[in-house]
Length: 371
Image 1 (cartoon, rainbow, N blue to C red):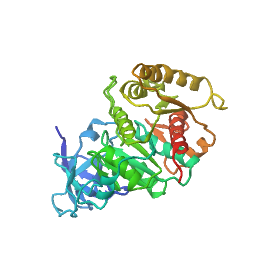
Image 2: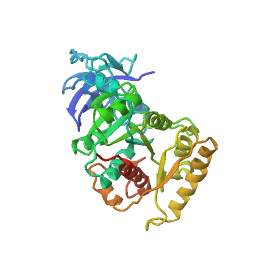
Image 3: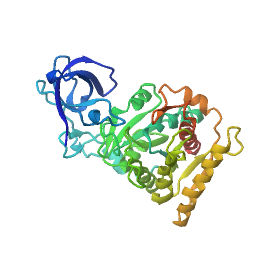
Image 4: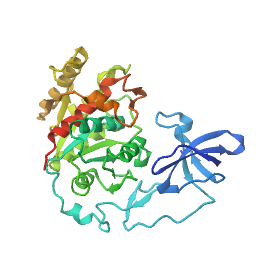
């Protein structure tokens, strides 16, 4: 069930492209709360307007919450901008929206996508945590500064691509060429019906050198073996293989997570790459010859071998344990215009989490074909 509350907009808070954040005074003197409005769905709430809110995540204090969601502006009804396409995202929910998709027959990119058959060897970096995005980009740009990078926002977590402040800042800093929202997600620079067509769009519409596929913020985990939204990473790697790309699997690693199942190599990486994945992928690790290599990284390597490489081999899947030089990656991470945090921990507090994501980015840059 939805938890509905009503209030009046008091003032504007910090906003970013596609998102308006406002302070709302609730009815019946119930206090003030922050709320998010997606321009694509509701337009821009103004001070003094009455708004209808969904406060489920806020009231339950969910990890990625912190804000109510503006569902409607009853006194400011307006006709939305018309689109040429007929693709519907968030289908059959009260907030379904019509978008112009690259694979829509009415869209300007339709003929390009329809004619596209292959990724032509384009590397595709896949990760399960959205917080990996800036670190992967840091790794790519440390190796190939001028690379064109497309980020494909999947629908396993936050459906609105605009919810990602990281992606917005990376786009604003010209470190990310395009955001493509795939599946039921919406609000990217480009829209696609599937991850497959999003990948083809990254290659042939965006002309990307490298694509990154990650769910949005709001990873859902249950503590069970298979009940986590990041398992979708396996399907992204399957799509990459089917379309002739080169899959790079980001290892989820932590040196600070107090939960045993996530310390060192996360059991999520073991499940996705060791048990769910049906095609080979590159697994970037630190070389033993690197001066930063120590007991922790040796432990991670052993975990990769025992929980990913061996189980996968038994199923006939031969992954590539790929050693990638980490020289300069720490500087590249610190130079990013996005604050690095994962599960509430910063770069200084959990360096390996970002280091392994950056290794995946550099690996992709080394694999990328050059003109």
